[in-house]
Image (cartoon, rainbow, N blue to C red; front, side, top):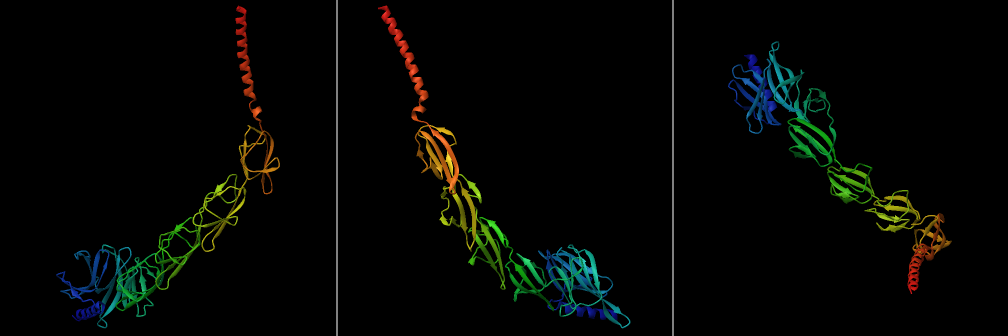
Length: 450
């Protein structure tokens, strides 16, 4: 009798201490037991209520977990832990894989001193359906329990400097209170949460920044410092992009010190800097380059005809003179194209246009009226001439000059008009002679008859 009374007193005291602000309710859902609920939480599709169940006949206490469907508050499962001790469930924490850990305290009666003593504190693991899986046993008392980051935390003292942290495999691990994450950050916890001094119902952060997060439950307190970096797409630091790019990022964005809307095409050629500002004096910067799309010419290439150069979204200089996009460059010479972009961006390429002639070959013979067409500086029989010159009959020597020297030369002949028609003048007299012969024969026959 003394044993039972002492046990009841200890269990009831522990229930009152653990329940604190939670009213110990008699659920009365079992005819043989009285349920004392000291805590509750929700995870997934279930609501969990935990504490102890007292046998109405023996007055013994067993550990108790009641699982209900969160959607309609109907009973899913009742887990009662009776292992021959006076048991009480102190806490239920949740793991990322859907399983959960149960902190249970066990008391045994020491007959030598006629008192109840703590036998063990045990962490029992159950799968997502509430089936027992494994346990870890400590023969000591803990000040407080908590659950955050899908870890179960057992605190030895009020400083929380010697906490035991347990993962889903019931392994003891260490957690770093300084965290760095990209893009977004979610964090599971039980109790209350303050983010940068403001109470929040949940930890779901998307804005980049520096955060101080404090998790509190009853006497437990845990502080972590988070740096949430923007999840940047479209650029890398010191990246080089051709023609354009677009930066996708969270936060307040500035492109070359001007406000920038995430996802907007950046077309201007040059050196760029994107700055991302967030909460708590958070600043992140990326340097990148947009190189031009160049059409019409290629670096160090040689051409024998004129070219049209197009380089959008930039300022162009050709041999140090301003050049208008898509203008014809036809004069033979060596060229340097300079592309100017923002923030002291400069890119140069060189190309050459060589002189050329049209429809002219060395030792060629051409009809009267031939026009000499060429690109570049030309000299005909030693005289400087312009393209399109109509040539008279004769023998010619033509030179194309480049870089103050002869680049190519041609010897050719232009036929005279008489020479050109020689073949045709031979045909016409022959025909006239034949006709004349027929005429003479006819006259001869006429005179003979007379």
